[in-house]
Image (cartoon, rainbow, N blue to C red; front, top):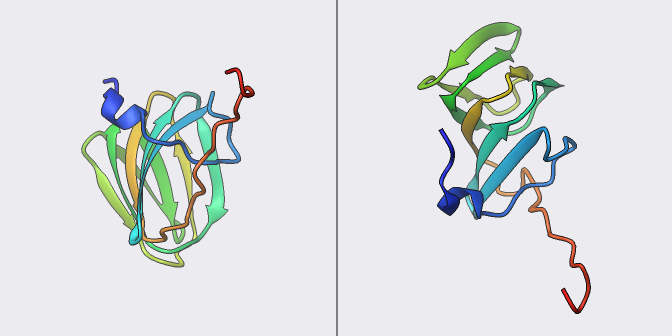
Length: 119
């Protein structure tokens, strides 16, 4: 499944992972952030924590470890990670996920570099 242009035209987020590995589309609110993730290459996210996070897998597979308990999530599966919970993940290439972060500033919006005044 390809995400439609109404989603892919949304701004990207700044990640410490290249956009050739993970492509993102951000919907911003004063109450949180909704991010569409398209996993282009396998990704392993190390243990970390932050405020609450809810997600659902649209396609593919996510192996999520929350507070030491590991569970696999496939298309149609949803999950919730409470604020402060230590979690890590294995994301398989081809996976598409929607995640809502309760922090309105969890990710910074990526700004496109201008090619100059004649671009």
